[in-house]
Structures are given as structure tokens and as C-alpha cells.
Length: 488
Ligand code: AMP
Image 1 (cartoon, rainbow, N blue to C red):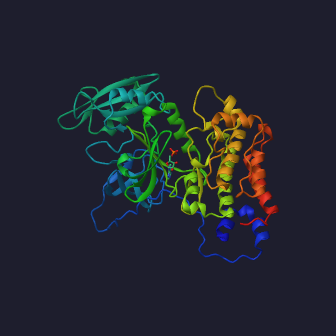
Image 2 (tube, protein in one colour; image 1 turned 60 degrees about the vertical axis):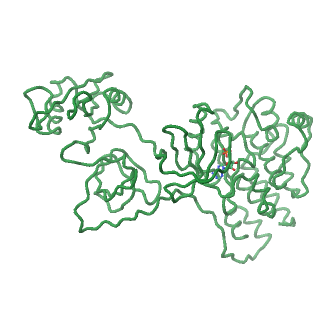
Image 3 (spheres, helix red, strand yellow; image 1 turned 180 degrees about the horizontal axis):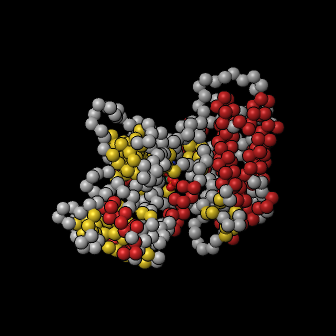
């Protein structure tokens, strides 16, 4: 245990050294493990004696998200050994590594169709071609070849000409040759394009560069990859389920009913989750946002939320040292949000998730907002968790990193009382009144006095006088280091 906490909280070294100068190594260390998304190990072994595997081309950049996936760049030629559901098992011609690539990121190179060519956009309509060519980074001279909508088996050339798009029908002769102008046929599309690239004045539209496709969202995964197994709980935006990714990797799946939330809120929550990465923040793995309901897939935290965990038999048996460790982990994660000027606005034990080895991670950024000038104030009648909310936020809806500090003080109270509700027996209204008059929660009998002093710091009436999360973490350490006599 000591080794584990020593490793986890390296910054507490002086405290541990003071407490136990010569520690016994603990081989059962539960050290932190990152919950990276791991693909199942590809289960094929390409046999060099087999006929050559088909050649594909990457249509988009793809960044591998686990060791079993293969990163490719648009235009890379690939050997594909196997198709597995919505993925192919591939190797770049220029490389040795083999891994999964989403099947819709690649196209087979065949002699008959130009599918491997970067200028060929299979299955898009005239309207979509216009939208694509007119969107950045495409510009004057961007072009593409698509299947003709009106003449099956034939093609169309769409070219951006300043702010307009011109379309040219490419007809097919009985011998397979292709032409734009009757009497001027070419044996292949490549040769036709080479001619009009050189002689663009004939069609009065320069062919400068193949159209760039829209960026693929690397977080987006097919819904079929996930199976729901057990309902874990329900939050502001829908149900949360324990599930499996590709029948192997345990994940948590938040099922969002879009009808229940503003599209804007949803996009914000997703954006926050995508842009934030810290070992003490719940990690987003993927989203399934095409169609309804939307799935948000995050790492699974086996022991659920901290509030319920503290109330469980296992939680009740935790020592003060464990509790201190958990409080430090939350302060770690909040220090990261503080550095990014992000206010959580709903910091409470119910929004902290606990993993197997007592790893704590901050969750639920549904209420988080990116701050422009460190204070986010709002009006309206949104429900707020009054007993966790600083008086200036409860009374005037003025949220800041300092109001998160207040909530952290309440979270400390929850932690050191093993999940008691703050201001038990008081209504929300009474709580606000009492707080405004200067009342503060008394020290719980299970709480070390130095931790209680930290709580009081967090509950200073003047928000400016409250510590920062960074300083808070340091204060906790100092307080504990100065009083090692407390039973741990
Ligand atoms: P939320 O909507 O995020 O407030 O989640 C509702 C409840 O579902 C939480 O209080 C947890 O008990 C549970 N839960 C949410 N996310 C996870 C997760 N990643 N791992 C395990 N349980 C979770």
C-alpha cells in the first residue's frame, strides 16, 4: 500500500520519508495503469506462398489509436490481407507493420475502375460534389471525377472555377474509351485528365489539384462495434451502460437522447471530452454520433461514482491515507482544468469515478464551460446543486475556478465523512441563508484537523481569498506533513 501511494503521489515523498524512513518494498504494488483503448490482436499470419493480396489505396489520413491499428496517409498504397467487419487488415507497401484500418478509409485498386485515384469520388451526387469543392481547403482548380447520376456506367468531371463549379459529362464508347468532346476519345481516364490538365482552356476550367475529401472524425466509430451489457446509472443526459468494444474491451457507454438536450450542449460536452486529456480526467474513447441515440464511449471505472463507493462496505473500510490519496487525485485533475481555465461547475463526489486500484477520475463535463475571462456568469433558472455551490454562484450564478474550489471543500467533507450528505437536515434555502450569515459545516469526527483547515480555506466568503487548486494540493501536503502523528 505504501509503495503504491509513494508511487502515485511522488510529491508526498518528504511526508512518507518522515513517517516511515525505511520502507519495505511492496511487491503487490497496484501502480496506476493507463486505460488505453486496445484493439484485439489481429489473428492472421500472411502466408508468403499465397497469391498476392489485393492492392488498396488510403483515401484519408488515419491515425492508429492502439498498437493493433495501422496509421496511414491519404494516397498510401496498401496490401490488404483480410477484411474483418468494418476494418481491413493491411500493410503499407512502404512498410513492414500490419494493423487494422477502417474499411471506409481505403479503396481497392482495380484495373476497371479508377477507385484508387485520389480524384475519384465514388457514389457522390452532383450537389455533394459542389458542396465539397466549394469548401476549404479546396480552391479554384480543385476537381473530381464522380459516377454520372443520369447515365449508369459513365462519369462526370466536376471542377471548381472560382466560386462556381462546372460539370462535364464523360461518355464511354463501346470499346471502353472515354471522351468529353465527341470525336476526341482517350483509352483511359488518366489520359483524358492529362489532356485536359494540359489543355484546360478547351473546357475553360483549369484542373489544378484533386479535390480534398472532408476530414474524417477519428473519434467516430460504427455503433455495431459496441454491445451493451449492464446499466450502471443515469445522469443528466441519459443512461450509462457497461459494455464491450468489439466483444473484448470493457467500456462505459453513455446513451444520449438528443431530444433531451440542446444540440449546442451536446457538441460542447463532446468537444470538451475530445480536447481534454489527463490521467485524472475520464478519458473519451469514441463516439457514435450518426443517427440516434448517440453513444459516448469512455473508459470504464469499475467501482462507479465516489459517493456510492464511499457508502459501500469496501469504501467504509478505507483508511485516512486512502481518503487523502483520493482527495489528492481529484486536486490533481482539477489543477489541470485550472491551467486550462475550465470551470467544472458540478464538482462533487457523485461526479468522481473510481477504478479498480482506487484511481479517481473527474467526470461529467456536461456543465463545464470554456472560460473567456475566468468568470462565467449566467442567468436563468437552471437547476443547481446548491449544497455544493459557492454562495456567489448560488445567488448570482457567478461561476469561476474559485467557485469550483468551494465545491472541492464540500467534496473533501464528503470524502472524510465516507459519503455523508453535507448540511444534513437543512433545505437548500436554509443552507444558502446560513452560509450567507457565515455558518460553515463543522469538522466531522473522522476528519483530521489539518484537512478541516483546508476545507475552511475553500469556504472563504470572499472568493479571491480561496486558494487555487495548485496551491491547495501543496497546502494539503504541507498540512499532512506537519502533522504526521495523525492515525493513517
Ligand atoms: P453521469 O451521466 O456521467 O452522471 O453518470 C451517471 C452514473 O453512471 C454515474 O454516477 C456512475 O455511477 C455511472 N457512470 C458514469 N460513467 C461511468 C464510467 N465511465 N464508468 C463507470 N460508471 C460510470
